[in-house]
Length: 111
Image (cartoon, rainbow, N blue to C red; front, side, top):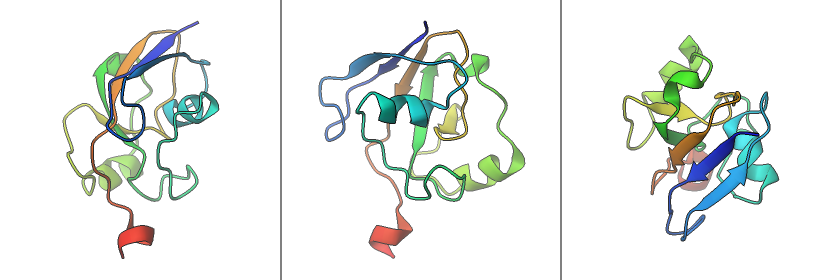
């Protein structure tokens, strides 16, 4: 079973976390099933950027981002070359290390 290593995040998991991941589910689904409360304002339908993560290890093992995800990522705070929307990045049999950015843009809260 693959692991997802979550680097420390001040609010969501201050000490970091290592979880068992289920292949075939998104990073977001795996985090939520393991009580890592990542924001997901659009309910995981690829309509916002609140579940943005940076994949520090294992990026190349994920499914390819489609055009809609790429367009949304352009609006994400702290965008990096290995950024993904966690609701769209499907876990396979490889381990991942992710970082949840310190900030997110949530138009429902901030708009």
